[in-house]
Length: 390
Image 1 (cartoon, rainbow, N blue to C red):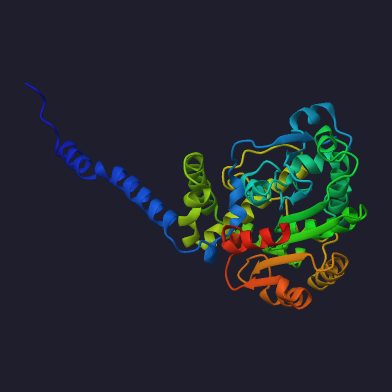
Image 2: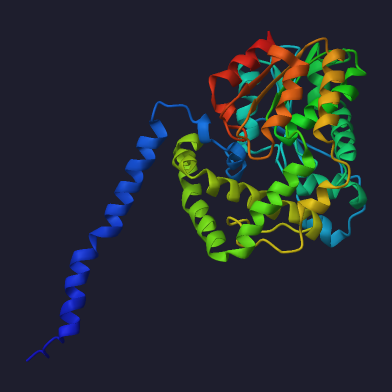
């Protein structure tokens, strides 16, 4: 005789039968939402916050140009820090596009490859520079006292460009004469850097154009905003781990489905995306202070000793200073600057865009929506890009 099953066992058996299909149902519904939201024909821009893209990395493209180390590093530290590299994609024309990475941006990140695709399609040679706030670049090429200086970061990019002009790839392409035209492209902090780099590149007396997407108008305000949002994770660890788990679940999908499609459903939760961006920026910037790479799983490993407030107090230009710089650079470039921006960008005050529109007139296109960088997925991005390349 088999022993009789208890009433509790019977209840568990019934519950299992009732709820066993639920995980499968949830998975099917989730995929359905992903597909519907991903391929829905409406624009992504209204709530898109494109700082999310660097969280994923596509396959390597182009050739890597290794940058030299300019700082003194202990041997054991040197072994733990990857080499800082620029990405070189040769083209058939004598024109050059330089893509300046945004905050903590890696030259090999998928967002930079997206920013470069129009240039590559037009057969321009393309150079993607890492951000001076990328941890490997900062530790290898900037003295510690200069890592929070905006002016030093611009100088470091100009120095990197001059170093690259002596590389075999660059010399083979342009020989003695160099590129005929240079187009500087940047998103977010990269847009600020692109504008500021115009001075050092103009020394070569080349025809220079600039395409700036969502430059932060006041770096201190942007830094304080990132801190305020990132603090919510520190105060609510459940929120932090939830975001980390969400990103860990989505990341494998990016290998099989277009990045835009994978992340489109998240645009329904702009507050969560803003939190995620702030946590991502903070976690990655901490590598500069800790001198070691941390495993990023959302923001669950964020330390408590890093703040953009201190980082951004060492020399960022105000909105008024930025407008003056734009005016001066645009005058030197004889009107070859274009800017697109969004009033709902979480890193700016909408009223700070008015001076830029006053300086650039119709060459500054300000949209009511688009988030922080969502415009790079919209037709206006390609249209403006092609206008400057012609």
